Image (cartoon, rainbow, N blue to C red; front, top):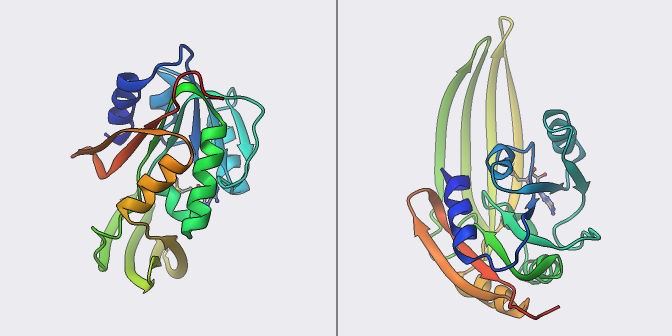
Length: 219
Ligand SMILES: C[S@@+](CC[C@H](N)C(=O)[O-])C[C@H]1O[C@@H](n2cnc3c(N)ncnc32)[C@H](O)[C@@H]1O
């Protein structure tokens, strides 16, 4: 599981003495139960709808609404995690760099950033994904068309068929995701003043994880 591997990696490199973790692009908080086993957790996401669900699930946790590129929280953390390729929502290399500088500003010295790319340019493959699931009374069929829209930009088209109460409805959603090269990630990490500890490739983490650390005795 991605979150368990992330916890191991953070523990391996963490040098700051605290246990404050910020979950970036936390969504509905799917990873939060794992973080809570080891850390005092704060969540950040751009979407008020996602945050509303997260707040209901975790009423004792502090959540902030903000954009990864420029959020401000008046606190520094021991660990920052940005999983499930959410960093792809930064879309452009400039925004990627800006986000990393902002992440670094919210890290204590000796603190660790763990970042999983959505995909890297080197590993990207266009594909059509198909999946069908049942959740008690609801049937869901999903096709995802993943294609390169422009250099460095992927478009994902989601087509959903939802079967419920004797009716089938169709819904379509589209999103754009920045496709950065390995070097662009490494440059963004270094440009933000973080030291690369590891680019971990492990079966639990689909596209790998960049692990950066803020040097000791830095601001
Ligand atoms: C793949 S989901 C993350 C899921 C989450 N880890 C979970 O466990 O539910 C991506 C999340 O990124 C958020 N997001 C998109 N753009 C963002 C941005 N610029 N800043 C912060 N969050 C953003 C979305 O609202 C969404 O919740």
